Length: 127
Image (cartoon, rainbow, N blue to C red; front, side, top):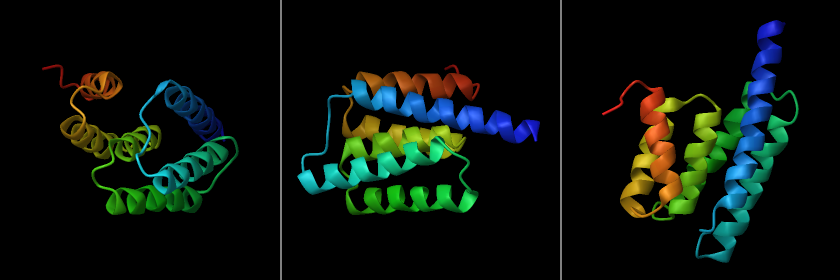
């Protein structure tokens, strides 16, 4: 029971952090329909973070993000948000791979560079 509560608190914190990061990011997808779909998936992830969601519900959001990335592989905003979601779900290696791809797409994105540096430090890869 205590482990479940701790996980809930981490997920809520992750969702709030996700919202805060998104509020500070200026880059949005160029295509309005992609931006709208990205907002819908973000909102779904935030809503799940605010309540006790099942693993199946989280998997649906993961699939929604995966599909969005597959349809828009060159959109750094989509990949960046997916990486944030993966990090919040404790999918560390997948998140790092996404951030590395965003770094290739948008090498001047300071937020991604900072998140990637933090992720590598958290993974014990300081160099």
